[in-house]
Image 1 (cartoon, helix red, strand yellow):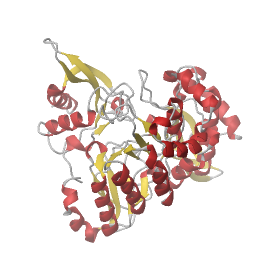
Image 2 (image 1 turned 30 degrees about the vertical axis):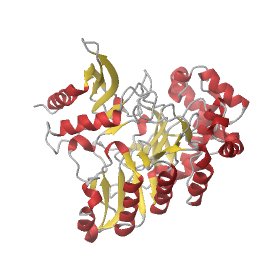
Image 3 (image 1 turned 135 degrees about the vertical axis):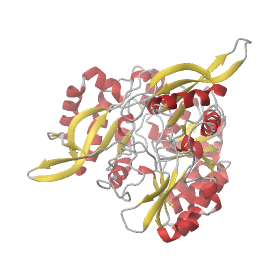
Image 4 (image 1 turned 90 degrees about the vertical axis):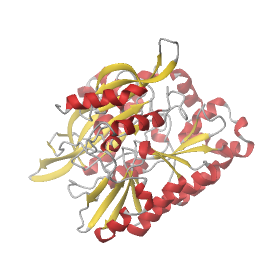
Length: 492
């Protein structure tokens, strides 16, 4: 597969498929050659075996910040062309489904009209750049890094980095809680401070080489440097350049940045990055991170007195056009026309004045997308699952909701569980960093029946990987087993 993809890229750069994309829109799906289906991923259009003839579209929403006008455009696409189906993702992003190639020109135009794109959101490109969902709002924020995350997400688009050895993830945050999960990314920037020329300067520490998928999950390693905020963008460009020019292209399972760093070692890798960067890096300063074990649901005081952000639970991130247009209505009525997406597949309404809070909490939609959900549901994250992904071994979204709902009846309502569920080894549900992690399996019973089961991982977080505790636990036994593991963790 690696050689095939590399050959496709050598024959024609993925970005060059755009004129043909419009031609296929006139001719229909059957006119698209197989190699061109791969190139369409450069514009965020991913064909899935489960939905032959239809595409999933992955958007680019830097730092997960969007306006209600942008959300209404997304909703219109979902409603008119995508069977009302939408998924919120762990990269603070939105995926649309059921799109036909004939409708793509209109879809692109609607996105462009509101300043959105899906360019380079698939295959061997750098993906949506994440940041703290409460960037610029949180009362305990070190500094607002959202403008930096947004600039990086858009400034590097184009041919320069349209042919990476493999996909590439970036997170940039000025939040002390590391809620954007820096060490699960290829580049993870977190707030730090350093004295430079007698002045205390705020900037970033950097972790490199995080990647959770495959059989060798790894958290990012400390790069040992301090970056000023102005250096963030050129640093990302330098790392991407070194990765593009030196990363392995022989075997796709060993083509992520972590493999290049393993081969070279961090000192050599950073020396090469420094050459491209063009000046010596500052040594590490003082990390400004503190322990993070929460979420963005419920009510959060903002920096400006009298204003709060209300975080709503979207169970396993699966939603629809009707819910999202209602969210946009509420953000217009009670907020300032802005929405925020989170790494836990949820959504926030910021800038709500406290005098309006009671009325907002009484709205019918908030009885469905609950701000104060049971603890077993608050930390629940699930990958796409078998209905839309041919890698997944089970319907992870439905099954994880089933397990979490049963678990809620077995543990105290206030006990938050960081439960992360993946349908396969690719770990899109991030099960390796969950307090409780589940990876889908299939189990053959003694009578020959094959049932859904999960491997159980425990003790993970975004500072350490979870440990495999048990294999192939049937779904109907999972809630009880998880409850027992939580009791041990809590010293009961």
